[in-house]
Image (cartoon, rainbow, N blue to C red):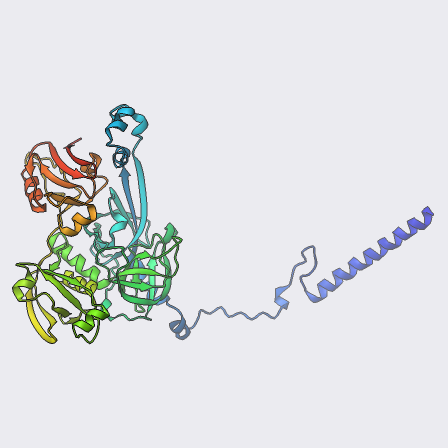
Length: 508
């Protein structure tokens, strides 16, 4: 029995050797890479067609946007901003921080308690920017650099970094103008953004998520988008080209590589791109940049009317052929509109030769027009068209109190640096619930790295007195600030916590 089993094993061994030999011979004859132990294929014997030449210029011109990107991409830069968040400032911003019971329960002076005054922390943000002139001017979004202690710019083709200074910023359009010390930079070409149409091909260039310069493409989905609630003056270009975090401040270009907008925001429920992106059009960006360079701040035209949109019911009552335009609900006494002869009930249908779509559009047209500009305004009054020449005034309000206070003894103290103030008006009083009899300067914005912020001054507060001198409006606050000459400032303010004093000291 054992002999029979041994003979059977021997037979199977011989058959296995013969089978493996046949496999080896077959693989060599047909150069097929199916041998399970990794036999090599002889590619020289396989009929593969190879064309090493690049795509023809004719085909590439029809299918590729590489020439357009090569033209515009060097103008798009990376923007790195850093700001220091003071821990004590964060604590003071908490609602219970000023509660006397809370402060007593936790030992009175919370600022000196290490448990409640941790170390300051550094926050960094990343965005993009666009070189608009060869001598170092760069446009980006205000939210990219807002509150930054330090801003660094890196060019697309270089690892070299430049420290940038803020020439000016406009939160109402989310545009900021930066400057670096460099020459012969690759500036982008601007175009008239009013010429773009829905369906036009566009390309977005930026640095999303910090991965490096990235290009996405799409079309113009809509123009003149407003009422989004992102900024005060909205006239967005909407696009489905992917705009992700880090793209903010980057370029939206047309099919010829010309700048048509600054990528600003996305509409998303998840935080990622969902095909709805917004860019500030070049014409609006350009007007902001020009006024910053000319005036050091953004000045806007002021007509002096309160307006409302036209509903179908109002169009019928006013005997209007369409719902385009804006109805004048009230004319402010002694304003530009009042001096020109506009009246309550007029329907403004044209401003500066452009048809008015609605109140948002009219507000934007007026704001983009420089003060002291004589402008034609077309209205419908009692069914008849009438034309008026209006000499626009300057929109009252904001001026930066920062950089006003300079010590005459040599050193700059700038204790009110970083505070943006405005006059109180009915809208602000209603929005913040400010008493109607309260006078003062409204704090519209305040930088978190400012001395005043560290001492407890916040956006929405009202400055009532400066060094015991009453403040009635923003102009009073600025004039008083210019006359301060010592090393500290006493502010008497109103806030949601009530009225209180704040001492701003120079820590240096």
